[in-house]
Length: 92
Image (cartoon, rainbow, N blue to C red):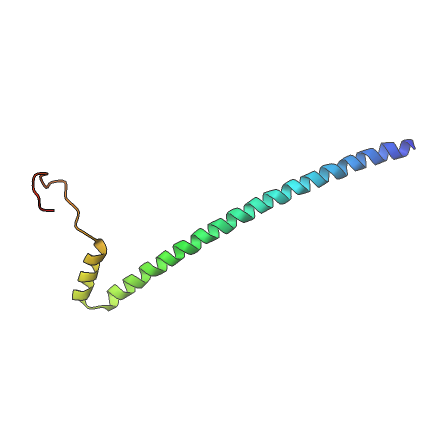
């Protein structure tokens, strides 16, 4: 009976401790997996943006000069006011 207490209790204690450790480690791995999946989604979105930009650059390289200049100006959007233009001047 004494041997059961001397050997059994520490073994049970170690088993409980190991069980808690493995549950904790499993939760850590789940969090890391979620973070990795989120980063992968961000990289995929960024990859799509870069593909679009490369497509535009390829089109610029292969198109004629006049069309390219017009498309670049269209991509820039409306002209911005410069800092050296007086505020009373109504022209942009």
